[in-house]
Image 1 (cartoon, rainbow, N blue to C red):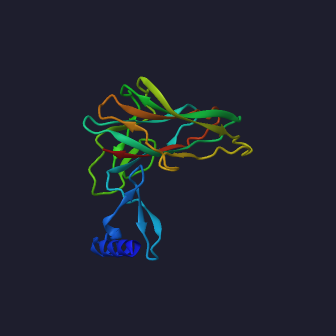
Image 2 (cartoon, rainbow, N blue to C red; image 1 turned 135 degrees about the vertical axis):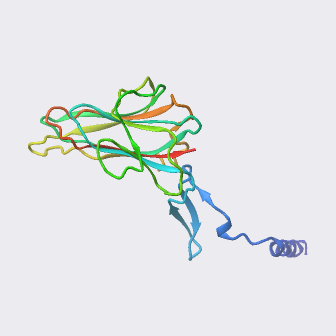
Image 3 (spheres, rainbow, N blue to C red; image 1 turned 30 degrees about the vertical axis):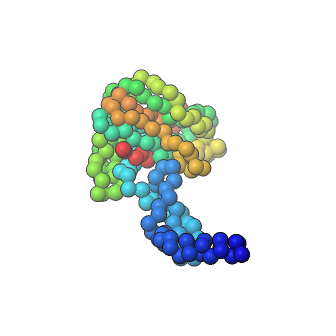
Length: 223
């Protein structure tokens, strides 16, 4: 008798609870860029690119690879940023070589180099810092292409890069990317607000015979 009464009470409670629409619940990943949603069949699916945070792409191409090249991103005075992912392209050279791409904090602003242009309309070595969503404001920090880098801080990441041979194409140089939003990363590389706070992505020199084919791209969220 007691179990029947309990089932009746639970049934009444279930009827009295409000229905929660799937549209009213949003589950975002750690980067805030992808959302878990309920599809038409009642199953869970991932909807990519739903973040409302201001997101930017910093990039440069056609860079000389006979020497090291880099992209330096400095926070604005009132907003910091998070590094979502980056990609580096390089060139084969006269001789095969091994190098390392280094992602590192910078505790002082760089000097020299080319300052990337906001909403750049032409590709090239000068660099661009462009909005993913035209409705967002401009990035408040600065992006510089192959400057004299500022004071080195902690090394965040290191990725090996093999340089192939131009004449034969042997060991062709790969296009290397690192995505910090995958595998449920608990936190993204984060830079606090302040004009002496930044991150650099430094690509190694291909060496003699390297073509002007270097490129660096970084995706960042400003907040």
